[in-house]
Length: 335
Image (tube, rainbow, N blue to C red; front, side, top):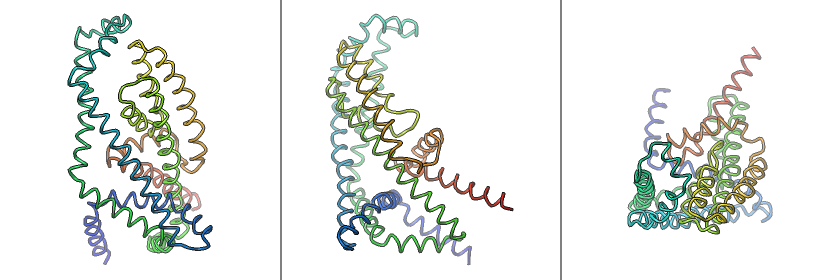
């Protein structure tokens, strides 16, 4: 019977695998927005369906704004950067940089010949912006599959929000572990997902938004593109948005925009840094219960293994791993 159960479970998982991402994000949004849905139910005098529908609309708005609004602007900036590099419009910036005496000395010490620096920068820029444009075209080519996945994600989110308690109890009763251990592992899963969403994703988006405003005010070309990349790096602890705004300030300084460089440095240190140091501890608190080193490793490994979904999968696996071995240690010591 157990062999049959394992076989049919593998077959069912294979059946659902094409929509693994949609199912995963339905679970994530359900976990994150469930407290909001419960709060709405209380203030609407128990109107559960209305509360779930309002919550689902909020989820839909978040997804649409991020994927369609920001995505379209990012695509436009990537295409603009690629066209600028391909047509040679960016050469004036490179002329300013190469004309700087400090840059010339550094290139000489590094053994970089005349023209090599320019060629390499343009090549890297074309490859990066071309890759972004290709990804956007790929999403457009698979629009039908994307819309289907979005529909499945929203429908499952609706089901999980409406029947969350019943589904949770059924899963807890089915898992072949002691109820106390299952509840502990489930609690770690929920707290990890909520902490990641609140303290990592929201902070990263806020830092990217502030960075975009700084870049626009300082006159940085394609500010939305660089702000989006900065938000991506902000997701990874110990790396952070400084990987983008520090070189940006240096670029502005080398191209003669000293005031813009000062603006980016002051904004990066005070505003972007403040968001990380102030918001992250408040939003995460003690829910994550993992060191920054482990969070960084799990996020990077998750992104490499599972793509964008690895942002959640990696830390969740790490959290469940630590929780499982914590239970084992507790039982072992008890004996």
